[in-house]
Length: 82
Image 1: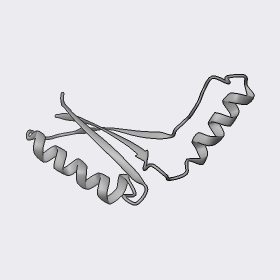
Image 2: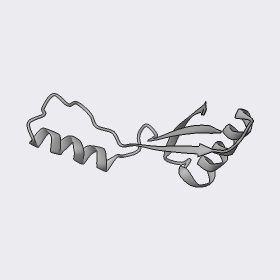
Image 3: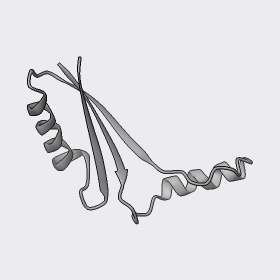
């Protein structure tokens, strides 16, 4: 059994309206020292398997086929045995 943590972030240069709105709201609330806010999405997946390399390959496929848009997203995968 493995736990896969997939962290998805926007590529450099892609606008992040949710992050920009969060930054603006923080400033309106008086948190003026916050310099930037970015939206990052995380998926925690529990996967039945015995081969860590096979699990990582499967998670790569999940990212490419469903979890991310390769045009606008970068992603990082971390696999831990449970």
